[in-house]
Image 1: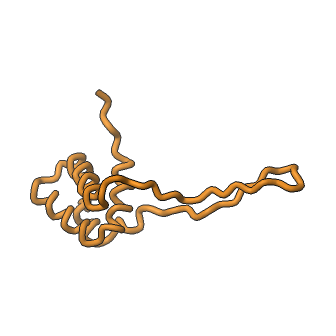
Image 2: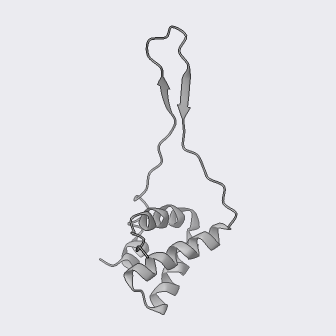
Image 3: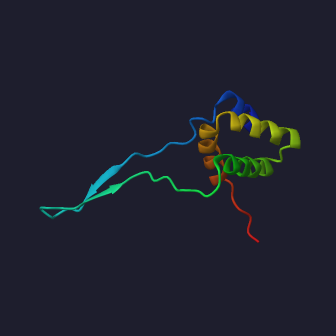
Length: 100
């Protein structure tokens, strides 16, 4: 199944997960400190649409999309930008960057 077909069916919507806060304590101390490890949203200076366009372009380049496939993938992604950002971040994380 092509990436475009997966996007259309919404099959990539469940590709990424977030981990909620996890508590950790230092053992052996009576009044141990508690460190809270939580999901942190990283602030970005680019708009979500600009980030999504760049992510779609990276995936499209990797898979050799035609101009029409690229346009259609971006159109579908922008229709649900929140879910698409999550999915395309996961997809691009799996693309190896070629060494110079």
